[in-house]
Image (cartoon, rainbow, N blue to C red; front, side, top):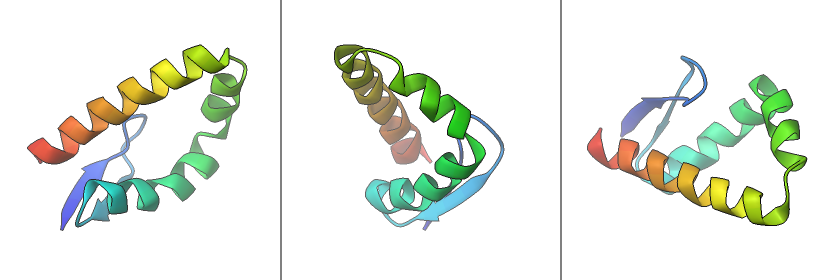
Length: 66
């Protein structure tokens, strides 16, 4: 089981796999970072996809390194 902090704050979530950690992080993001999520929704679909791919890759690397 790995415990990592949110990339936007000090909240932590746990998961055996990256996918489990991401699922555990979703409710936190929806509640604590709703304004950030809303801001992302104002971008073009291409920008959203590119940023999401980068975010996933960066966080997968963080998870794997933990």
